Image (cartoon, rainbow over all chains, first blue to last red):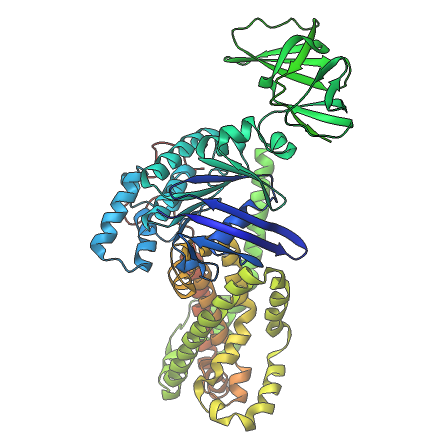
Length: 341
Length: 282
């Protein structure tokens, strides 16, 4: 098991800064997801770790050793790509064997590792098949087996599920997590899908414009986003216009003090999740527009009288919700509300 | 709709038939001249099946010089194909991976040998000839010139092969598994480009079997040079060889079609059926 750290990496493509003084430290055996919108630099960060991109500045350490100048084929990284990457001229077993041959392992050891890898991804029966005879999900499982068979220091997963349909995606996501935990391999998982990142990771790193906005366990990223960007990017968020006056935030008649807002007086946007919103007589006057039953929860959309914005309130599924057209008051869990200008 | 489709199919077949006649007619005429022991002015519909014989070609085969010329042409074809493989494949891979924006420029450069007539290349060879006799004296010195002449066809073939695979991902997957450039090229890319390389090789052979100008200027006795010379002493024998050469080239192109036909859905080694369990292949 090996730790991974990137220290102050800067990578540019022409005039575009892909990674801007980017640092990240990952513990041994940990799975960290890099989550962010397209062009935020998450794949570039992964490619810098793999050795496919050379940073303008900064260093990559694997198990404490500086590998910044080590070429990609000597880094001992296992990588699963977004697009199908099985070698079409080799069958499943030969694909897995490829990395073992380059390491000059004995035929006995190669055979053992191929069997182990196939068992890990439960594809023993498909050992002799070629990539065109496998489904997308099977191909990605073989790619995973191939990457793990070399016993890599770090497993790099570059949006490995994005080409798959929803059902296979969800199954394979759980499988990747199980295999990663079983093998104890340090892993970096790049995705733009927040559900994927939140469900699979020990920690999630949310990226924006080449920088790490927040690196924390999934629950923390979701419930206590460190910035308005993270709050907006991860999960659903209500944005309500308000005003700061002497440290107090006011939306119409509703006033509260937020421990997470240090804004100067003036207009402000309040960011709060639907589940941190409730019906309360001291809250913002609003009219119910619609209620959507989601099984375990109910989503109630209300139109605030003082704002053009719709506020979504999430209630437990068993609670009786107000009828559309009825007048209500909405307030927030003040400890969870964030503000942005 | 069906009748319109039928008409369209019929139209296509008619065009194909007209094309086939257009090409077959002079070919048959040449074959009749070469292989029928009939006076030229008697060659008509009534003599179509009369006195066919292989004597013209067997007498050409009887010339010692013929076998030397054939051997040299085969050597040149193999040498040119190998040179193309060793130089052009890494170059094309490098252009695709490292300077994809230069692809248009490289494409333009590779088409130049097709646009510039061979005689212009010959003029260049004549200029350098006094300074490079040590090289040009060898019969195999034709190989680099033939590789250049074949470039418009071979580069396009390899380029199309590279565009058909996910080159970047395959290369990076190979490198991430510990393979250097050499192993990546040898074990991953070249096998993945098999069809393109077969096409390129056949096209190279076709070019070598048809090239006369440079061989003549450099006084090399290749098969086309022999054919041109032999035609002067025995026109029927010369044309008989030309027919055979055309047939060989046609067979090569048919070979491209067969060799590059996509593989079916069944595993060729294990003969297992396509997967039916779990998810269906997309």
